[in-house]
Length: 111
Image 1 (cartoon, one colour):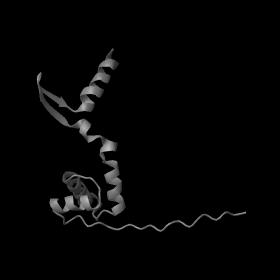
Image 2 (cartoon, rainbow, N blue to C red):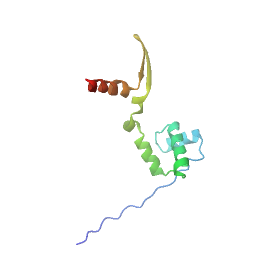
Image 3 (cartoon, rainbow, N blue to C red):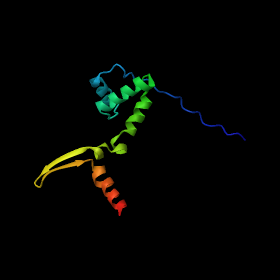
Image 4 (cartoon, rainbow, N blue to C red):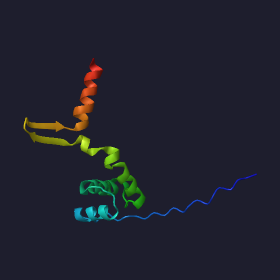
């Protein structure tokens, strides 16, 4: 007996025009779509789609990029340079991941 698969939902997506947006417009778009991408991120996406894809991105593509680049996936703050001034003087950390995880792991592996 053949089983019938349930009807698949239709593919609904829309192109999001970003080519002609200035940085403020890109930031507003990120905010309105709740992408949580910085203006710099949006500019990078804009440049990529113009130069490489030669078309506008879709809402689905922007959502996927936003999810992939989100803080909980990429942990951008772990790569940030941190300058701290305290009672013991100034300290500069060139990335939490590199300083406290990678360097320590590398030292352990050298033993």
